[in-house]
Length: 425
Image 1 (cartoon, rainbow, N blue to C red):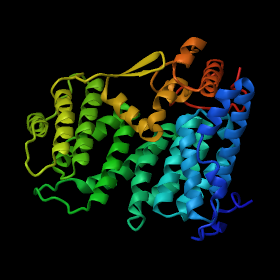
Image 2: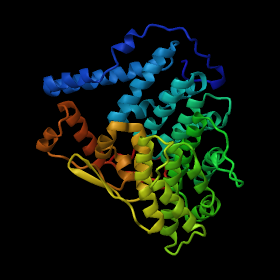
Image 3: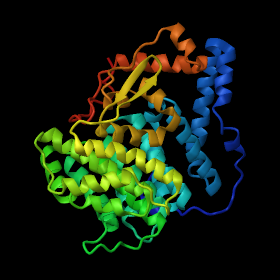
Image 4: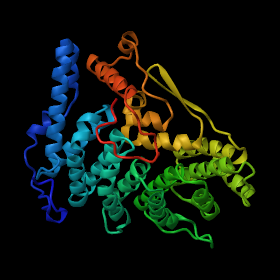
């Protein structure tokens, strides 16, 4: 079996462009949906079988000789995992998929490595926090770190690994000390973008700046699960230096830095309501200038985007607990984004599931745990019908909701034990 065995024995991919005829038949999930819509229960069963057949073809095609075929297979699996709850199907095949991701990360080129890194996150999101995702992550973490910290590696692959390593650590890392070690890897990158003490700026190209921005955002995501003592240490070390990133020429880096500063202030004040920052006034002045930026050399869209974010960041730094609340509606439910912690977490998941976020908020037990939404709500037939989704998807949704409500769940970030198959009651 080419997937198993010693990793050192894996043969490199050839660049020959083999036929992708089989994959082209599996490129869309809409066929399965229409079959289900037309055929009632029999149609649902056919659609389920068709979907599983397509997914099996994608998994098999991730080890094809053709780079184009592998890319198509990775993209197909990503699209399926972003828009469906596929726990049972994936759970049985998780190590096969993990082997494919490992192979594509090690032997593929830039775009393929990016797709493989994203697929790793979606796999962990499907599996949730627990033994299964920990097992996946133990295999992939050293590869992520090697690519991330290898200055000679493809820059797009490094950017993707910076983002994926952050989310996979949040979901699947079982040791808080390893979380801190990963945060230090991110620090070693974004600190290179700091304006120096003498005011001189590091000379970095836009792609390297994007790598540092992704590393900073992943670092901020992991701040949300740090212990109090670690947060104190991080605040002491980085809060005096992070404002230097506000001088960066790149608007996305400035925004990431601003949001991270707001997050740190929120976490520090949660621990100590009397928290004080020595350079508070100069920081507020700097944030105010970014919130009212009229620099003629900056693009209009950049300025508009920046001003909007920094108005919120300034309010957060000036007044404890000041956050521009946002309400997310999905199905018959709603969720409030009412803190910088929740915003950073929501943005991180949405980056991978995209338009499938509302579906995951409804039916993905793990994501519902993260946002403290409780078990999925069983929705009556009339409401499901009005949700403007196909009969097959309604069937999948209620099946997932019912199963999740009857399953004994591992709490997000709790100490976990391997209970094998005995966790279904």
